[in-house]
Amino acid sequence: MSPSSKFDHLETDFGTAILSELTGQFLIRNQQPVRLFDTTQHSAEYYFRSDKQGKPYIQDFALSKRYYPITAYSQVFKIPYQTALSELCQQYGLNSKRAYRHRLDQIRPVKLLNTTYLPVDLYQLCRIQIERNGFYQYLCYFLGQSMADQQIERYCIGTSHRWQYEHTFATCFPQFDIEGNLRQIKVMPFHPITGRRARTNDTVYKWNERNQLYELDSAEKVWFAGKKLTTDHITNLQQCYFGEHLLRDKTKPVAIVEGESTAIVCSAIWPQYIWIATGGSTGGKWYNPDRFSVLSGREVVIWPDSGKYEEWRYRAQPLRKLVRSLMVSRYLEDKIPFSNNNVDLRDLLTWPRFILSDGTIIYGEKL
Image 1 (cartoon, helix red, strand yellow):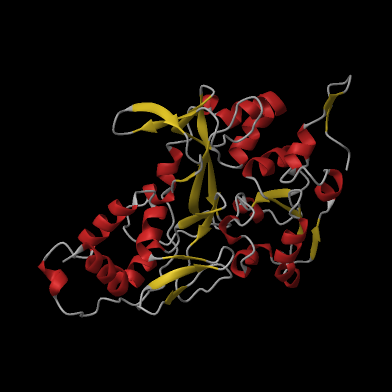
Image 2: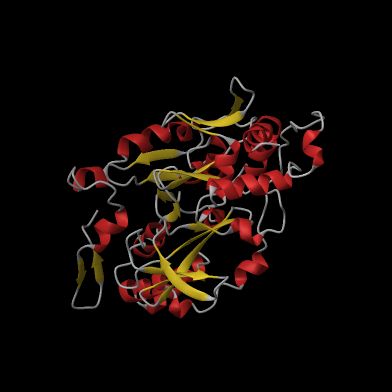
């Protein structure tokens, strides 16, 4: 079978199966992970359909771009296109005589899968060497060790050897849902003094398992570890809010921010709220009505980053029907110059810091 016919055969006959097995995984758009949906869960960004050749694809309405099965597979698993093609041909039997058979039931129906939960006992293994965790060192520097320890326990923060940054290891941000199930683990390296997440051009070293050494890494430094921790070939990993497990406390209003690190720091400064994070501007589809259900009946304050107020206000509209009260704060929008977009609440609170004579710390401006 020629490469072109093998390519067409794979995407036409097995494309739906390939995409369905990727459901719950991520494509990258504007350096943010965007979840793939199956045919029964249409979203504003992606869903499956077929083109004139009968090939299913994912339509990105925001960028007017199509992702066909092999491309989607290569992006999700971060492998070259030809490697993805080879793996899929082997998986679906196109490297054998079976490839010449007439179609039987090649286009398999997409099945709704139960949500995959990650083994908590495996995650506990990364809750060691916290003293070498870059974000923990920042918390100790900024909040003091006692408060840092409290926040690490409160949010179940772990340590990953995946990256080394400024002689520290990366930070694991687990997503435990309101029932205590572990849904996903987001891993990022942080600077131990500034508390900033490592960016593409920062000098960061990534562990190479094959060579058993750290090598300079110039790629995006965010990793979702859930796929590696499950033994199932087909998974349905559904994210939840970071800090969602804290919503079992019904006595406090809820504050929502974008970044996990922001939620942790703000929780120490303003403990009268339960602080949870979306994990990104579109992180985990935080605005999905299904995701909002855990906020039902609560008092909710949303703190968009600067430049995001209108977007988040629009996204939050369906939430008004569920909650007792909802406020989308303009605080950052009004305080930060228009030219400084993507400044978050942690930035504003941690820029100035005043220590009074009695040792009391005043963070940023008084709200």
